Length: 544
Image (cartoon, rainbow, N blue to C red):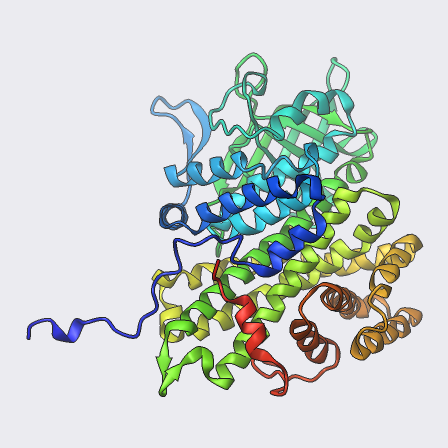
């Protein structure tokens, strides 16, 4: 009789030993849709391999270990010499190494690279989001470096490499390198033109000595950093190598690591420059213009990261409710719980579909697609990242008290969920960027309207939402005060148009009814009961 009360019943099995990629129907269909058939089989194989790794018990344990053992700053060695190093748990290096090996920094050098990388990034985020930061920065640095062809020729092969080399040594001696970024300063934040870091020209053309302080410097153990500083001609983009060519350490004084709400496996630092050697990237005084493409690429990664977090939260919730029984049956079969799960699944699928469409625009590279990105990226970044927190919180509630316990993994998702909304420009910055695109680049709005117009006539609620959006765009009175509302509507209409074109009829119908037709309450789980919610939930179930 001893111990009989401890028999475990009515608990779901761990969601492990599955293919995270192949189990995600919205994601696999987007890859099939956007990747050239000539490389589709190769893309499927590599993404399924990454998906199996992400779903394995071993890699999931690495994610837990990296999160529970955050990085540690060492400013000096035992002899009192300044070293400015950050120590990471071995699990961090394993995760980052697999991410690099999977091509998550190599989108620019292979066919269909952006969609393939976007899908992989969305999958890998679900293991542990922290290592996404250096992967994202390294990927995004490439278009900025191309403003300086000599620098691009030197650094691009290292940044797009599939080799991870963690050691601090001259980048020229490494088969692969990582990049970070330092733009914001404590007195300016998102207002980077308020930066006071000074860049004094040296005798060698294109080189400078930097003096100043960066309030946020991402991935401080990277091999190089793109930073903004005030040169004689104005704000300028510069490349700061961590180790100089002669093997000596550049002056890169780490003041402290940030103690963050989430993203705890990743190091975010404050750094001091004092005569720090740097090379100019792009024209002097045109720093914002030079770095803006990097910012746009990292903003898309914020969308992808949030889509990944939402997908994992929904997968965990649906998995739990598939096995958990209450009140005489499975939670999955209870009409009210099914309504909640379907509502969450709609948010997740809409985010994934939009993110992969934007990645496909990068692969296309045409003028029309570049114009679409100009307005769609900040709108998507604004809206999708805002939806991440309520989705993860509601998903945790689906597990009841289990979802409030660290071992479930849901609290880690909840803590991570606000990050992408804050990084690379918080909500107001994105909404104002949407306004700038509307006011200064009419081709951006034209590209957007052509994109959503492809779905016109397929759903009357979408047609009505497009009409209402045009009315809103025609009224410029108090436009800045309405910028958030406008960014939200732009994102929702684009999501609706994409789902009408590409998703199952059940998903498109439910999205248009609730998000565009207004037939829902303020909380999740208030969808019209007449919809085919069982099909929506089944589509989201993580079975590969």
